[in-house]
Amino acid sequence: MIDLDKANAELDGASPQAIIEWAIKHAKKPIVTTNFGPHEAVILHMATQVKADLPVIWIDSGYNVRDTYKVAEDIISALNLNLEVYTPKVSAARRDAALGGIPGVDDEAHVEFTEQFKLEPFRRAMAEQAPDIWLTAVRSEQTEFRKDMKVVEMGPNGVIKVAPVLHWKEADMLEYLAANTLPTPDHYFDPTKAEAGRECGLHTKL
Image 1 (cartoon, rainbow, N blue to C red):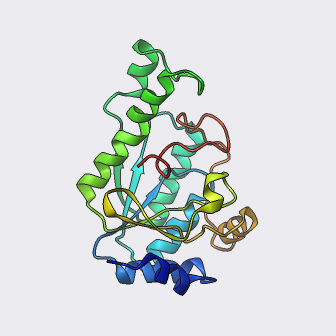
Image 2: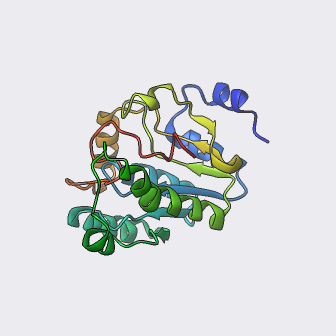
């Protein structure tokens, strides 16, 4: 078992690349998750430079906008990603046509919606993939909750969650994208968040 305090002390001030190398070295079955949103190509590029066949898990809600899907395909092809896609058991088309569509964030139905379109597929992915280390692209400046996160934390079901770019700013992400000629979508929409600065539950409820 990894000593979290020791790991965070060891990685204090380390570069994202060094953090990823540390994670891969200590993992028996690592994964990286992505939503193919803005700047996501950064961690995918970094991680696959260390381990080319690293499993990449995408929880695709079915509600992504056209630009996101197009950029996702570009990244998948450019990096030759070892991609596993998990989708909700209820399709976006069915939800829109028969189940009331996307509820407002203040609607009590939004909790069930988030469970259907984000949390349940994620739990299913984690159960099937059974990773011991999970690489995530969360950054401290994104939400109030993430300001207090550490680079190495305990995630769901005993999985060690590692956030290599936690302390990077948006300018750092943009610089890396440009330096490595990586695409990023101009338009992205997460129906379980609905607005900037909200958590979807992956880092707060699982």
